Image (cartoon, rainbow, N blue to C red):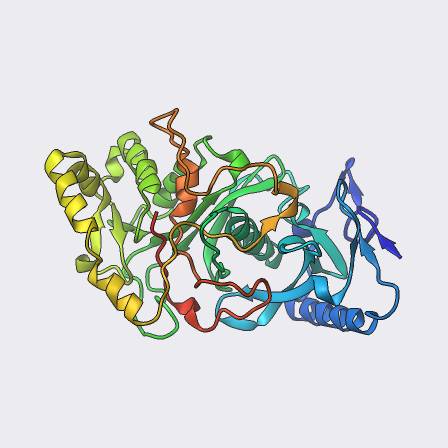
Length: 381
């Protein structure tokens, strides 16, 4: 039996005003019930392994047989192994994700991040379960798997179930997001330390929407969301490219120069550095010499992490690629565009700002990342 789009599930993918309703527009079921449904479907796949399998069709690609060897469960939330997502991978490249299973339906990755609701426009807080799925796909699949690094593979862990985040919607598509560690929230699951100020933790803009000022837009929204706070943080370490975003932002909005700090959790005064001051110091000859000297030696915190068995990741890694964007962009994730000294692919740098919430991973999709999710792992640009 062939399962094609858009006729897979007439109740979920229906016509409205000449267009389709997408997953985020229709997902209203109980998450636990939806997971049980996915587990039941997976068991049926196992029982049908010896018979003629169903096939899944994506326009422009070969049909994919729906078999056990091509599907796997991955955690939907960090530190919550019981909530999982069922993913379909390319049988010719098991590191390429084709679709996710929800509501008795396989949804192509690109359809998961689309909407038919015209009111979904601009930056909108993640609140519904459907929006959590969109955040998962943007972060875990598109960001964590599409951003290429030829030298390294990294396993990107998803956000927690209560992560405060906003998705930027434009022209019916989720094109960017940022997440925040709220003041007073726990730094991790192993200590009682709480963040002492709001901290911008993750920011990402999809490649085809970069160089359009979206990184600046999200940084401005972050600052405007906490007007009553005297200090705001950006999670340490900040990549060189993200510093360019910050420099342009602080030149455009000088009133924010005293408020933005690069911080290590929980953000005590001894764990923060004023970003504007650091930019000014490093732009001076004396500051450059000092930075060159300092970066030649590992920081104590770096040595501490290595002693705990943490393997550092040089750049943004890649475990898999989204099939529909696999060949759209061959640029490496950390490459800067030198043609425009002010932009220099700022939003790309913004993506590199995220602390890689994972460890080196070589076993492919579906494996376990262990209990390292509670720590922040540094990306060295």
